[in-house]
Length: 154
Image 1 (cartoon, rainbow, N blue to C red):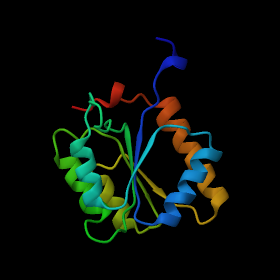
Image 2 (image 1 turned 45 degrees about the vertical axis):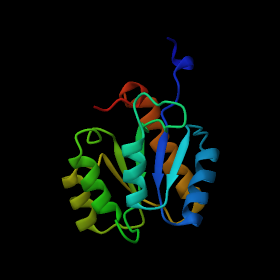
Image 3 (image 1 turned 135 degrees about the horizontal axis):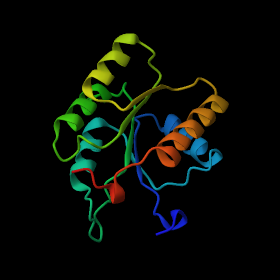
C-alpha cells in the first residue's frame, strides 16, 4: 500500500470550551490537518467514547482514534483524572495522549508525564501560535512518528 493510500488516523479532541474547540478546528484547517476529528466536552464523555469505539468499527460504531488531544482543566472528571484512567485501562493505555492545555505549571507537567502522557503542549495565547503548534504536532505525530495501524492499540 502506498503512503498516499493510507487512511489518516482519527483524533479525539477532549475540550470543554466551545471557543477553544472552534479555534483548534480552524488551526487544524490552516495547518492542513484533515484527519477525522471527534469532539468530547468532558473526561467522562471521552472515556465513554473510547470504550464504545473499536479497532474494527461496525456501522454506527465510532472508530477508535489514533491520538487523543486532552485539555486538563475541565469541570467534573478533569484531564488529569481522564489521563490516569486511560493509562490504567489495558485496552486504551498504548493510545498516544497529548496534553493540550493552558497550564504551564511544572506540577501539571510532571504529573502528566508520570501518568503516561506522550507529550505536553501549552496552548499558545495567539491564534497564529496555535496554528504553529498544530503544524508541529501534525509533522511529528502524523509525518514522523509511526502509530499503530487502524487505531489498533491493544
